[in-house]
Amino acid sequence: MTPSPHPQPTVLLVEPENTAELELYREQLGGPLPQMKLLMAGSMDEALQLAPQASALMIKAHHANAALLAALPRLDWIQSLTTGVDTLMSLSLPPGVTLCSARGIHGPQMSELAILQMLSLSRDFPRLLRAQQQASWQRRPQRLLLGKTVAIVGLGTIGNALAKHCHAFGMHVIGVSNALQSAEYFAEVLPRSQLAAVAGRADFLVLVVPYSSATHHLVDANLLQAMKPGSFLLNIARGAVVDTQALIAALATGPMGGAALDVFEKEPLDPASPLWGMPNVLITPHIGGLSDCYAQQLMPLLLDNLHAYISGDRPLCNVVERP
Image 1 (spheres, rainbow, N blue to C red):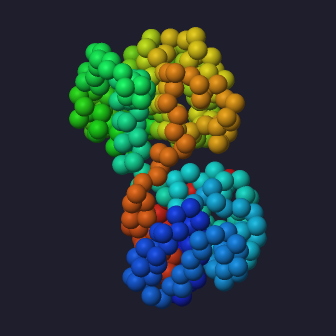
Image 2: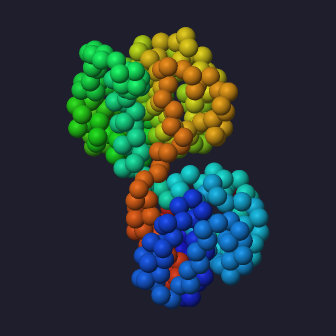
Image 3: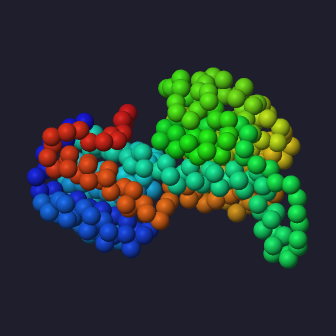
């Protein structure tokens, strides 16, 4: 979508999580685009005060709320600073507002987390940590990634980055996608209709597929029962891609060896959830997309879209189609 030109726009950037990055945003966005008025908010209260001036909003989707949108009467563009835009989509944005995501920047951190999870599950690293805490010298054989089969469900930026890492570890890499038939670093790419058969072959089943009605509870009781005995499920996609209750039952009684979960159907994960106490489960608090250089990773996309927004001479990147 090519926007109308905004030669002197006012852009509100909201970052209440990591206010230390605000100055970096100011330097790297304000410098190259002096014609733009950049307003910075390190809290939601600050954002509400500044909002009436802005026609564009940059914010992590999970920080957005109806009160902030209502305070933006001139709003016509939202640049999400996250790939997921579920929260923003649920706020019933006016039809004249263009929404863009940060899709395409998370390959490094997401793939590194998946490798960490695979190594930890394969070698039962929590057991090694417990032994260290007990000053207990426990040697045992170590299971390698070398020669194991990993199935990656979703062949976007994250899936492709992960495939490269897995290939370097000497793994057999299978992709599951309806969009592609082959891709670099994948030994095979199979359609989603064959997911159950792939799950029966894979030592690691990794979910990086976007969430939609088509992927809601993609991993259900039947698929969990089809998994290779002793294999591991990794979910770094969205919580609702997996049927949580079916997963809990399968972890307790099914053929699978364990799971690493970074996302959940309801977040934060309920302290009463049995997942917390399961010895074959690794839980991380939705950190897959985070990095110590997140603002730098975003910068090329932000600059490109800001140039397009100001000049109106080319389409914005990562426009999210809305119903």
